[in-house]
Image (tube, rainbow over all chains, first blue to last red; front, side, top):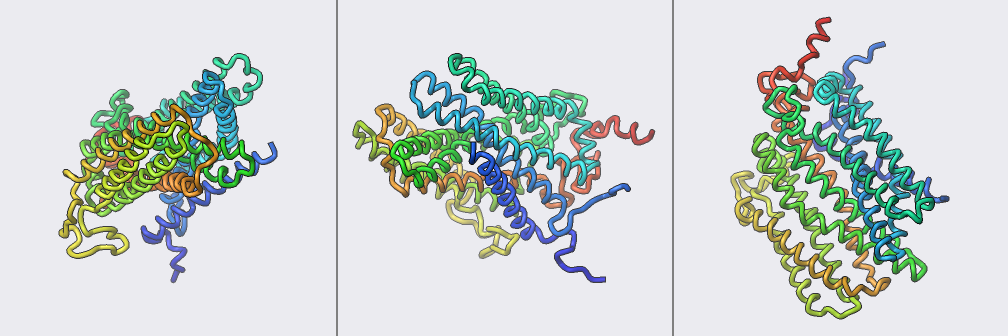
Length: 42
Length: 450
């Protein structure tokens, strides 16, 4: 049985490093945008 | 239906925890730093009667209150993810640090009550300002206490004490607990200061009214004083922290300082260089707008900028040509090819000490010039870009340093550890190598037998 490379449990360390890095930026960026949005009309 | 041993496809479960914790820390550190900077500004506003301090403190308090929602959500999601993805490890952790986690939870409650009360009573306590300022400092102090609790856990994971976990004092005061706490205490102010300066710069560039330009120009200067002022303490405190890692977890130290992950430390030095040079350049620029001309001080600060650049170059030269082996960035004979001026002794020591001394010198010059005041609202665009550069770089530095500390426990991945030498990444307990021995699972086996 073959699996797509993307469905393997873990990618290489370098790939996960960059995925992790950009996901942190997305989560924090999202939190900041959310905070900006709820503060706009106050 | 039991969920059994879960893994996360594509990125793996370790990365999920890293993403949640790093995101939480980026927000929580800002809140911790700001919840002491804001009451300080409020106090200065009360003493000096300058409206800008009050405006800044109140706006920052509002931001803290609003940002607290996202920070808390990430903290709770992280704990849920940890319990779900690493249940065995979490039970060990809870076994060792039950009281720490309990205090942490109640501190959460306390900080919410005091922080929200502080913001909410701003107008009501307008005529009892001293009391209101105390409210703010109490909120900040509780936040610090929270940080201290979680530092006990985080430091123990890298450097567990050579004592049974029933020895509460030695477990809590493990070898890197105090240095980590100091490093984070100073880092909170620096991080919040740089972000404040970056935001002020953005608002300054977009300000339409003259009073807004003056206010945001001042706010950039105020934020940078916190950011750079506390940053220059980090070489000594960070050195103390690394020294304690070297003494208690030498393999981890070798991994991040001399081994395959040494590039991470070089990256931190590059980030430190960017912040050091950008901040000093801002100070040099700002001295042109001192109300009382300070041409001599400005010339001295130009010299300081040169020395900052020189010392930062010393810090960023890698020790050998084995630059980033993970992506094949290796030149010559790799580790065998030593680079000139790259060794830790004496060059990095000279670089770090020099950077700190020049930093103190330039801040002292700047503070002396600022006693006569500046003409606000006239700063150039590039000086504001320097502030924004510092803000972006400090975020990258936080991510780099967080990754460095956590990856240090992996050493050569044979095996990597969750608690160094005690619990592996596969949640296996290794009593033969664990400094705390079998005491780590004390009480758990009895529970399992039942």
